[in-house]
Image (cartoon, rainbow, N blue to C red; front, side, top):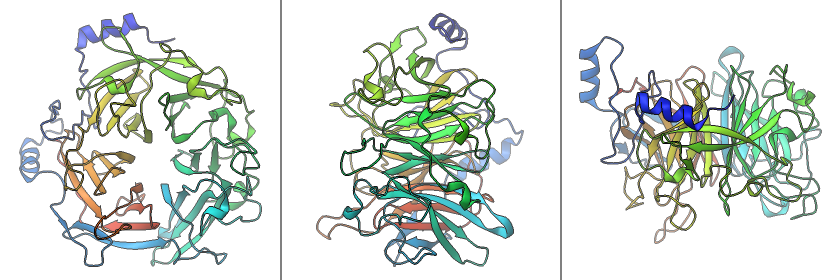
Length: 487
């Protein structure tokens, strides 16, 4: 049953447009002077909360790295796990280029497994180190992207192998509750375009535990064919949520409803037909019942929109791209829909930026929304104002990959202009730096720093993994992690 505009308006009138939130999904605000609702201290330790507030969030200023790789707070250290052109796969080839979305999985005996996307687009000849065409694991032999699986053993030893090859522009994705990785193609070339021999624009499943399960890769066409970014799966209801990074018109945030009786689990997606379930796009409305055309319209932290879902007419988009199959008043769009992470009973969703010329609302340098499937609402948690100085520490812009921290709040990978950071946002909206990329891929006169990607904690919460996309480095960050204050 859809959440009608009248019902949502009535609910909003009773509770207030800034609906009160409980638990760790408190309102976040990450710009100087941004407004945020006050969190209610619910743990009964008022003195401790005041002490934490006085200490402030984070771990202090970043200390420049003499090695020129990664600046971290005092007491923290990093280790390079893989590096393109230096470390090698089990088969002897070098680690592929352009590390992107990543997830961790707990192995036996203290082993950590990571599945890593490689955002390689177009023909294999374009890249010095494409994902190797491992026998039995290739979808399209003309495509250069895919995933690698990295095994970090307790003693520090590292092994790598191919999880899937012959896919295109593997950007983000999502971890499933049954222990697999869904890798997303941010490219929708059809067979015959740009040298491709098969259609692209799909989601594929990669099993880090069972190499045999990855043989004969099958596109999960029921998720639709478009420029995918990320995907998460609701472990309770079974719905999948997906983001699209595209423009003219702006992309969409999707929901896939599984067919009746379907039960998720390892290998179960392969049993579904290409048209299984229903793919839907959102139609949002505000507390007054007014239709919202684009998420850039929201300018205040704590804005809550009701969400209805509209069926996608042709999910495989043979003739018309999915996002163009809707009229002006039928769906709600957003520019640069990027990373997602499931946590706190819902999906955190990133819109990386919105500018005057590509979005109808107010310009911003990043939003993070929280979709609550139980209440069918989107709540604006983070809004970054337009960054006035991209070469200044602390002025973050361009959020991309995201994860929920076991120490409270969010950890966000920056893909903006100028300096590039990993930064945290507490539940009450205070931000703090965690790392700064020091690998200059430009010149001394015109420095350039690549984006951070694939930010994710190990299962035990002791290690934060993240990638620097160029020149292609996976890093393991350790240190005195601590619970962040809520205020």
